[in-house]
Image (tube, rainbow, N blue to C red; front, side, top):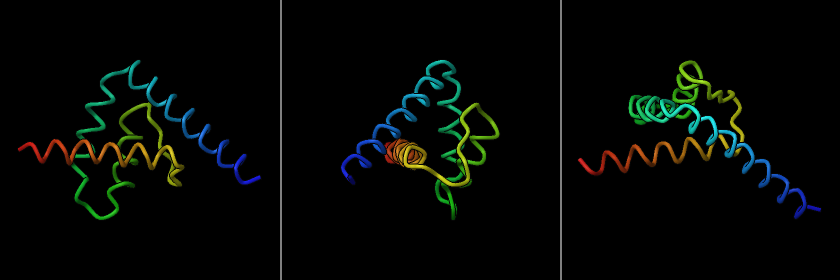
Length: 89
């Protein structure tokens, strides 16, 4: 039974990420806003919530207070991109 639950959870995460990717492709400005917001908050305490809150207020990307797995994954990747960017300088 847990295998079925795991599979359904993974499918849900993939579907949520696909919806997000569609939003970004439909409105490419979301990417730059997301990176800018992440740069602003990356080193602050509770960075994930600060990034999510500001990104939700500025774009069509809505990240709820209670993060699901797709939200956590997106925030993790977003911060990795900013850290990689900072490492280049």
